Length: 463
Image 1 (cartoon, rainbow, N blue to C red):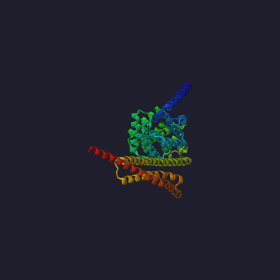
Image 2 (image 1 turned 90 degrees about the vertical axis):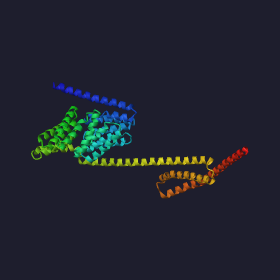
Image 3 (image 1 turned 90 degrees about the horizontal axis):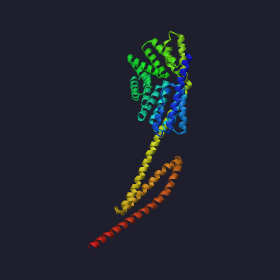
Image 4 (image 1 turned 135 degrees about the horizontal axis):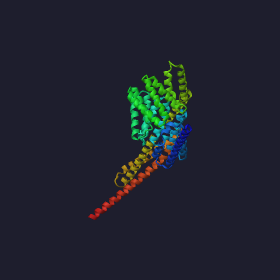
């Protein structure tokens, strides 16, 4: 009987694996023929379910599949999502260095697109690394950026993910009002979209807020809902987080037996799984509890804390994360500076275009008016000189930046260049000035003479 049950469970798990792979392959086929960038992103987001929080192997395999297809088709949205999946996979395996590297690649590619929901997704995944390491200020700043980009984007799911994570960060830093606000906002969006997979996480945050506020019945209601939902979805991580939150709640209320029960349950949930590093918090609770009463237990859980923390916060890991964070901050500063430079260049190009249009309009208007309406010879000569000055000074304005680039701002070379330009433009300017004004004046005289003859002829006829 026992063998039959084991065989049945194995067959069921294999069926689930094949179903997941078939679903990924089906979505990738749709992505390959979809031209609209927003719809392609929505297809990728539809892959995100329980597996992305529960199965690092699935995340990595899916990320590699997406990356393979996206690189063939030069698809920036696909490449961003691929690196996000890979980063999430390695994060769940407790490898924050490799995870952060992939997430930084995802952000760098997302910034090249105009899809703000995509950028919000990449930022949201990146912030998880800092939240796991309890670097809450850095995590909060990235989650806030993700929230701002998601609010301007098209995808509704993205508008809830970062706020739900902000709820956890602000809970950890005892900013309870902010935690409550963002958690409720996330829950409202998930409810409106009929998404239940993320509810356990939101319930944990809401339960934690009410626990710290002293609203025990309300806190227990949220914790029980989180526990039921995480067990129903068979989500190991959420179950661990719920049990840890319950253990902290009972410690807060000096209920040591219940605290120890849920702390052990949290450790058992992730024992012999890739999520073993999540046993750090409950192990610390047990270590502190037995510090004065049971030396063996204290030593046992202290070792567990060290083992769980080694991958996330060892000295070498801390140095590498710090360096990678610095390099990414520097890259983003350079990217921001480049955007400002591009905006200034666009503004300058528009100004040049408007100047050119204004000069052309002035010249055409002057030529038209000089034929019929402007009769003063000196005025024609003056406006002719002004028009030519505008043309040549505009050419000088256009040539000056080019001259700066080729001379590398060398004063001597700049002077020589300007002298050469002047040597060409000044004589040409004088010649064109004499030719243009002479032609226009003569043309104007001819027109005036013809008009006078016509007037005399009409007067003679009338006699």
